[in-house]
Length: 288
Image 1 (cartoon, rainbow, N blue to C red):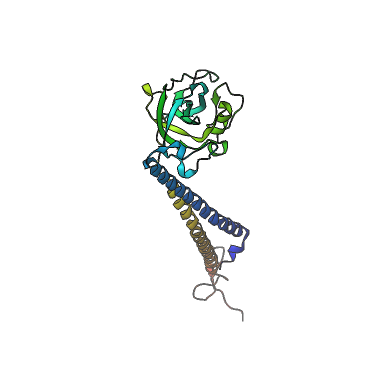
Image 2: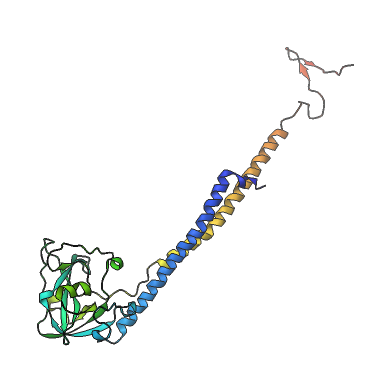
């Protein structure tokens, strides 16, 4: 009845179906894990933004790698800006996707150590090799508040650390690199400034990270699992249809053979009459 399943066509179809099922299940779990990570990150951001601010020295030190648990922690730092060692971070976008640069200014703390402060976004210069127009940092002692971020790396950000850049321009925010340039101890990570607000709105401060949307990863996971469940169902439907078509084809062939009249006898079993050329009937007689 189902011997057609051993045909080459059906063996290949079955093997493809068997390969698709685990692949789709795995893709579903991949999207599900992405959903879980997004939810966990949203929770971390929300909790750290709600936490009371602490001095940055309590969470970082020279050479310190900021752990993920401290990302976006609210911190404060008091000191004076060192504009002589200010740099801009190239190819950064504003809140409305304009390409420009981030302004990275060292803040010298009371104990002489330095913490990097990302003061925000400014438009790039007309010539990419020129230094952009950067509003000056506040003079004198200032208390900065913001969000603690980890040093950027090419592996984590996907941004290549290009060499041979114009003076005072960098691709990545790295406390290690800036410590080498400045020649002083720099706390690991950097502060994404939120207070005080810049005079005239420039540099444009970086917006709070999104921690409300969760994306469509869960919906994609469900879709992949439904596809995986649909493969065996589709295989069964095709197999049953093939069986039905083959049965119908066999039945049609048998009927056509049985209705053909065989040896040409009349319905009542008598031999049919023969006719002469003039149309008169000749009675068939059996031989004596």
